[in-house]
Image (cartoon, rainbow, N blue to C red; front, side, top):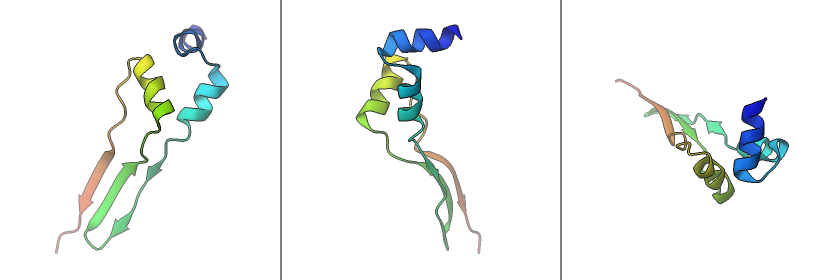
Length: 70
């Protein structure tokens, strides 16, 4: 519970608001003849700001890339 309060104080925002904003980050898995990629959505400025205030590196844009072998 204390982490939530520290997060709220650091970001000057409520936990529900922070959760709602960060929950908008999505992971998509487009696939095609060349392979499959697991890729997160682009981060909005507010999401980048929250992560920066908490000193958390943003998640990588590409989580996994699988190529099809002929």
